[in-house]
Image (tube, rainbow, N blue to C red; front, side):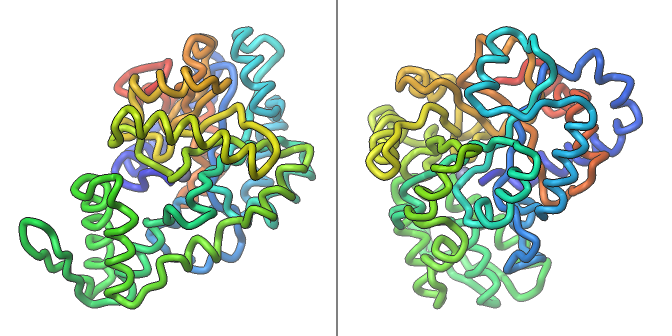
Length: 352
Ligand SMILES: [Zn+2]
């Protein structure tokens, strides 16, 4: 799950402004390749107007993106191969690798046929807690709660807070307010309990979104056996690692490998930081992931890959294929590298 807010809107504005410049800039700042980031891939989302619709693209758009990138010379490779290519500074030509976070069932039913058509590998990052129910797709549950009510009351230590959800505009604000509440006011360790309380008291099933949209272990085992698919780790409980103690963060990063090995028979070698933005991953977390022995780790920071990333294999940026902006021009502009420094205060080599 990623931030669907201000950063992406700003980036979209910049993309629109720089689209004409992109073809000229690409030879100079296009970098050596890109890691694409997906979440859901479905033509029939349950809630087409969802506040979380940035997390979903249509399979037809995925097809178009891969075809377009192939036509312009990108080789689609596995994450293992991408790491090898980064290590040698991109010799061997421009490459792309596809990643998908959270293990949505539609990755199997709707994305995989597209990937098979193109022979394009994918790494799917799994948080076992989301599959087992020790963690929730809280952003979906929040949306369901807000949609269910005209008004909500949060019981907080410093007094109750009533949130107006009576109109579509108020519902948008209420979603943002609840995101801020759950990701900054509530302790990371308490997030699930607070969310489930909120869901229960408003008549919403907190398990619904997980069970409806994520794969079961049997489904994950089945997709993991596919030659184009690798399973990566996404912490145990989809935790914001920066908000955890060192011991808890190291446990979320290390023990998830053992859980995935027990379920799938193989230890994952690649990692994705949940949320992946600056307030969820910093130097400390990158160090923990490196210490745990992963080959690579990806953030949700925006950027193309550059030869310099050989020194930063545990803080690799990605290009989000965002459901709100499903246009090839948008993808081409981002791949040109022109938006990389724009989204990162002038930095060309984006790490954390
Ligand atoms: Zn995630």
